[in-house]
Length: 237
Image (cartoon, rainbow, N blue to C red; front, side):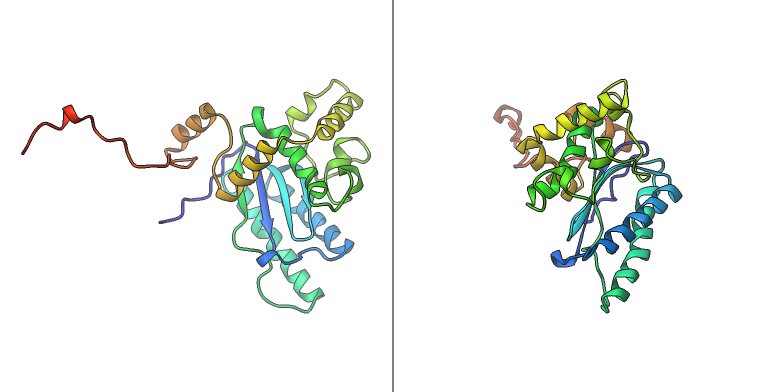
C-alpha cells in the first residue's frame, strides 16, 4: 500500500517524535543535549516553527510545535539532522544513519489535547524512570513553564496563556496540571496517533480536517463492508 503524504496543517499544533535507529542512544552527554537545543532554536526561527514544549531523552526526543506553512516542519527536521548527525558521528567516530527513518507526527485538536500533550512530553522522563519529577530533568521545557527560567526556544501557546492572568497564576496552574499526571488513555492515544500519523481529536475535528484536505486523517473502520439487505438483492440477472 502506498504511504500517505505526511499530515501537516499550517497553524495547527503537531506532536513530533524522532527516535534513534534501532533504539540507539542519540544524546550521550550534556554537550550533546546543549548542541541539539542550540540548533533547534536556530532551526525553529529559520523555518518559522513555534516550539511550545520539548523533551530530549537519551534515545529520542519529542516536540510540540506549530508550523506556519506546509514545508516548515519537515524542513526544520531535515535541517536538524543535517547539522546534528555529522556532529554526533564525528564526536563518537561513527558513520551511517542516526535516526530511525522519518520523524513521526500527528496533528492535535488543541482544545482537547494541547495541554495534555505538553504534560505528556514533560513527564516522559518520569514515565521512563529517569527522574523522580518533571522538575528534576534538565532537558525539557518544564522549567520554562513553571517559571524557573525563560527558555528562548519556547513560544508560549495561547492555551498556556489562558491558564492565568499573570505569570505566577499561569506557572502555578501549569505545575498543578503536570502534578495531576496524564490519563493512561491519553498517553496511549497520543503515542499511537503520533506513531501512526493520524490526526488526534474529536470526530468533528477529524471530519473538518478531512473536508479541508480531501483525504483520510484517521484509520478506516475495521471489518468487511456491511451486506446489502436480502430484499434488495432479488434480481437474478
